[in-house]
Image 1 (cartoon, helix red, strand yellow):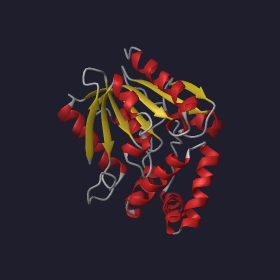
Image 2 (image 1 turned 30 degrees about the horizontal axis):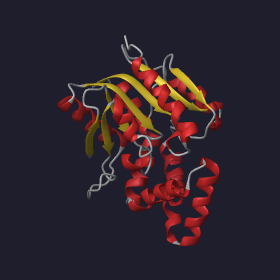
Image 3 (image 1 turned 120 degrees about the vertical axis):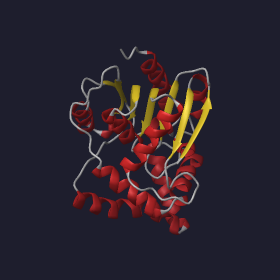
Length: 256
């Protein structure tokens, strides 16, 4: 595990938790500098995605390591935790387990999928090759690049950066991450005293995700944006600026 602390050391603490098959440098690369101007950032790279020789074990083991770091270094409390995609599963677990306290849990347009073991195994067998298989030849790379540019409005540089991230990590870590995320369930109607929950809802994902957010968390604040899944992190300023403004507004709300 790797925890890098950067940004405005006098600002509120904001932990950044990246998504599937990503390190924080790639996942939050477009917004790190701007978030760091205001917040004391704790940037997390999980086992298997930290540049070392470790392999990602499972979601709960990694959650415990995050909790232990916060207990040892931040007095068991964070002003905020911002998850991207799978990173939101960590935010949810950190809130519901209550080993540490988070004033503001910020969920970046997650799917929060949950399933049984058979379904999780089948899905991982299908999805992991899609995330890693495009690196086998330049034709597949070019086709994937064009899909990313078309669907998410990524630039060539951003598409190449994300493809490079997917290709540099051990497929075993990616499989373990994807599979165990599906098996790590959230309870319904989670509520924790003095914790506020905020969702960045990407409207183009579909209303079933909106219903899911309301199912798992009690009275969450939901901000709707006309974008695809996590498009604010790689789709350009027209998506990035409004979401950064919303994050600032979330963090200013009293958690009491």
